[in-house]
Length: 104
Image (cartoon, rainbow, N blue to C red; front, top):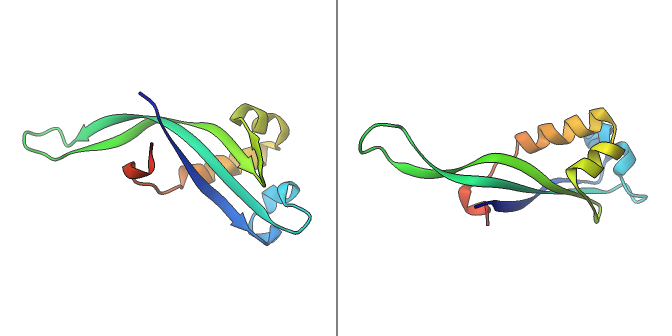
């Protein structure tokens, strides 16, 4: 079973906030980036009898990246973005904070 989650990654009105993505800012100077991720839910625990059990997400993959209303697959984005911009988006995604409840 796969779960998905869509989160806003960037909401910026200043190109100085994300200079590696300057190409993607619209003519009004705005940049909105949403990312849709998928992952596999697994039960996790400390490995000792009686320890609590909780859900985590493994094998997280990028399903799509939406930039100012235009949606790209991760492959499409990697083909048109610079290597630095792609790596920067990957870093932002790694730093995303989310709860299990964010996944559907």
